[in-house]
Length: 322
Figure 1 (tube, one colour):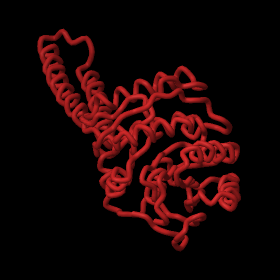
Figure 2 (tube, rainbow, N blue to C red):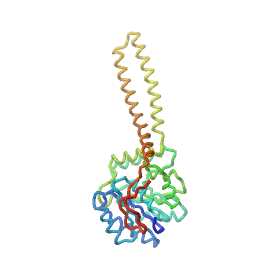
Figure 3 (spheres, rainbow, N blue to C red):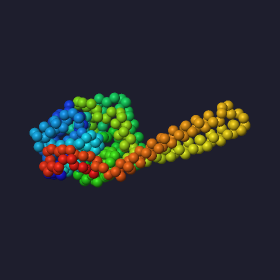
């Protein structure tokens, strides 16, 4: 675990060579202003560029920098989890490396934490540099997810947040493989509040969340915290069953009285196709939940650490976690 510090700043990074030096500079400037002990814990999520090389150079010059390097890309949520697993601070802050979340806001979060709050999350009041489509879909998703679950997941809030040590310790005990951190933080409770901020444009580089990943992330959030898709599919199944029965009876009646304009089997084929399509939808939804059960039963490690730097008590490389 290393020497206990006041604050741990967890920074997941994937192909961020264009911004990582500036990220370190701004975070160091902010944390130095607190005049309290801290560590900057960068998690290299299998970057294919010079991100890890640059971080190693930074760690040689800054004793507050810690580096965790994955053996491959395990994903953003897993990288955050790894950072929290290795963090030794009394308060843990998660922030992305792209500088869209301003490091200065960390000071506001710390102030709220000192007031007694256990979780302080950043609430985005404005999102600069993002398309109308992305803003719209993000807004719809957050509100849709909130209405789909019994967990009060804050809207317009990402993973940029401060967690008290006891909250982090509880999160480390949750065994999910398909992790949705912001949902888990809401689920465990504790005293929570927020600070408002304006999300900036990406400082450099390209977004790591294109539409495909955003859709996957949204689906993770829904299936991790809601059974509503299963309930909806059951309801649709009942409605379609009733419609199918009534339609079949109507076809038979029309056929008997001789007013059927088309062969009855045409309607049956169309009806069968409709029902078959619905069956595949239901099987897909059920398969997603069953797949998650399968992931949990395999009990594979959540991530693999191939190398570390900057830790006081460094473990052997190729660590398996969870």
